[in-house]
Length: 201
Image (cartoon, rainbow, N blue to C red; front, side, top):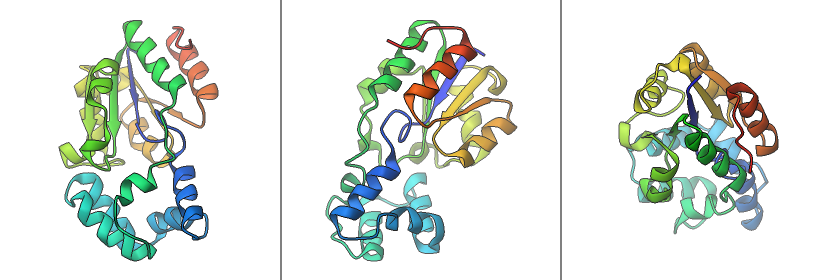
């Protein structure tokens, strides 16, 4: 393997679902309200898909999803994601991978292009694929092909890291080696063993 491809939210940040839970607690909702809507409510699933593919503007998503939740729509995406903070250990691991000569890439389902630090992405990655910019979202197989293409490698030469098991299946089907992320303490050593390089700092 010569390429490391990673997800953004939940891999380079802390747990997104924990952030959703904190949002729910702050608004007097059952802890898993947001998660359960995205998993099981057809309207919420449609809104999420349209947001992530860029078919729906952030403000429109906020208005409609706020109505499902029964909360104020103002800055709803920022509030939902407020608890998803940068994971320094994972960011350092990607930085170290690139410095070691690996090709590094991002494959991210976007909640708005403005949520990314573009200078940081340029520092960390040789290639960036953001769902809202390509009109595809994980787990569509083609977005993983785009990720491999973005770093100039065949899928079989790449590892892919995501915090959602369902997002790993298409990557595996293309020949990528996949890693289910739960914490930097688990993922970084696993990547070090796979690539034979030191990624921890």
